[in-house]
Image (tube, rainbow, N blue to C red; front, side, top):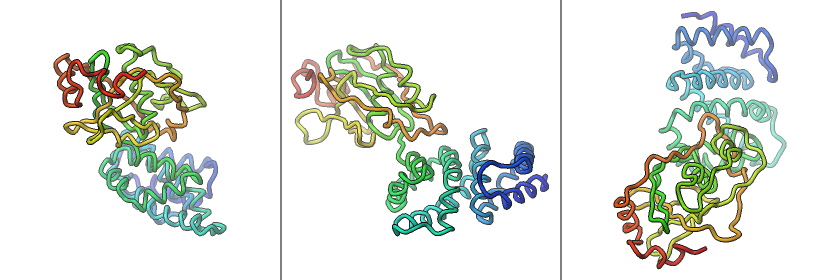
Length: 329
């Protein structure tokens, strides 16, 4: 194993004080990247050194390890160490802001390095579904991220990772009695989902249209989000136990709030209300290019399959317009 490449990189990380890297650091980094391709175990050895480095050097090394993951490296070699470092820094930064006092020199140093570390965590967590699930259920962790997200993108990005969801979805169109199976990936809120449902379905249903590529590319993390608005082509509703009529799906709420039938999330479409509210592209952010959002139309339901699902939703054939909310204009 090329110990010299790692030794030189660690020395450069200890000397790094933040900002742009110099030519010495760049040479050491390139040698390390080459060694990581030839002998991947060097990545694990580098990851074990993260906690021993000063914050600027630890963050830039973690960022390099994230680059290796994005190029196909094994997350097992560096993911646990990068996540452990993040979880060690986060409460220290949080205490500084929670105390409503000026940050200590140590807290300021950690905050200055936190964005680079956050980028690496996003790259690693994108390949660590179990850790994402466990972290998302940690109320104290999620509260710290929520309180810090306006102060550092290192918190905002990781919170977005942990809030993002992927699932199967049934979409049923009330007036035409058509249905589709879709799959959504890495989406947090309803408005983001609506934009990508519309992009996936397009003109296949009454009321549909050709998607706005400018908006869709931002929603799919193909391009950086700029100011813009999207509008509903349909009313998005679902069923809820104990409710006599369909319930509107909240655009601002988590996609987890969409109701399920037989374990599958379901949305029912009817004509959009006149003057229905628009939503802006801020609902697509923070953008995670390591975990791009998308909705894929997997298949159209047969007539029989669609009618089965309408029946399960309490809308058997001939009753679509008889349910309050089903065909409101």
